[in-house]
Length: 20
Image: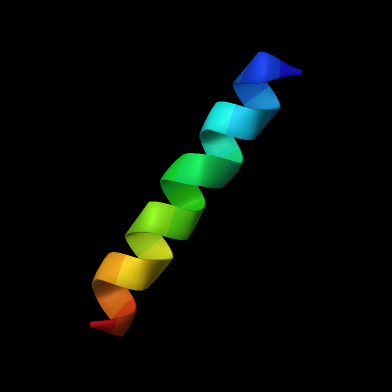
């Protein structure tokens, strides 16, 4: 589960970085 949460966090951060 932790791996999934970390993966989602990375995707979210990457998405925000790309959005800006």
